[in-house]
Image (tube, rainbow, N blue to C red; front, top):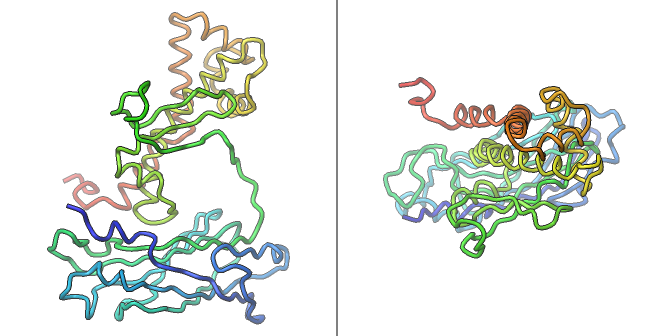
Length: 325
């Protein structure tokens, strides 16, 4: 049965209005959703207060049964995720008077945590059990949220890559791929590998395509995505090796990929150069089979498949699983 709260993700509006460094006076943000404060990177500030507004539309009240709408058992939260310092916390904006109106907030962050990009997202949760199936039934289950606002404090160098171009499509349209597959690596263009995810698996697609950094969706995404990435990256590494016949590569992404995963592979295969791996793979037989296994192991170790899944279980699972009942 469809549940109403699935239709309310992205419905709450959050706008940033003002900021203040170390009680030095208010400043107005240059954008309500994507402001930049990089001009203050080296100014020596120690804390910042962010001010803004969160608006609950009238439609959010419909996420509660009729007999609850006069006094909805809900709590409006603001989730704050300091993406580059990995500091996450949530604060309550309203927990006793949920209505379709605009709420104001002020949150102060230490410079120790406010580095790089900081994301703020509004979340509405239910606070009491409900026995009506089309409504959220469990306490503190998210029933609505809104697009995040991101404040940029610093330029941060990352290992960003154009390697993973992920797209969603129904596999019923692709005759070369079994329609029950969850994903596949499109090798049509060696310069731009593309991963297609089968959108016919609606719930999995919603998790993978969810633009969240906190909450159950982010945890589930972090637990699920590495299992796909592990196999895809293994295929890409082997593809790069096959292209390295003379030590040269066919695409820009291949050499950096082998620089990342190659050292452990070279050590296990007693090789020093990409063309040596190419020769071992091209010869087939036991040596090629061993190389494939080595690639899979090295990639799995570096992609860290298991820890995010364990973290998801720790954060979201019931006591039954955590206690081993």
